[in-house]
Image: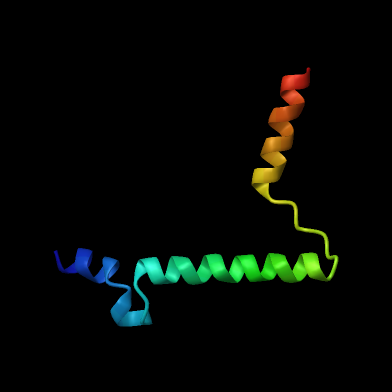
Amino acid sequence: RFVYKFVCDLKTPIGYSAAELNRLVIECEQKKLARMQLHGIAQPVTAVALAATSLQADKEI
């Protein structure tokens, strides 16, 4: 019971709840993508993009 509370209680050790931390991570990602697009830097290829391309190629075969 103590371990469960410790693992789930992010607010005490880091100062943010899980929802707040998730929101901050999403904001950071969106800002980074916006900066990359603003400066014309190509977006990095992610595993999701590679998988989607692979699935599309499989459909066309």
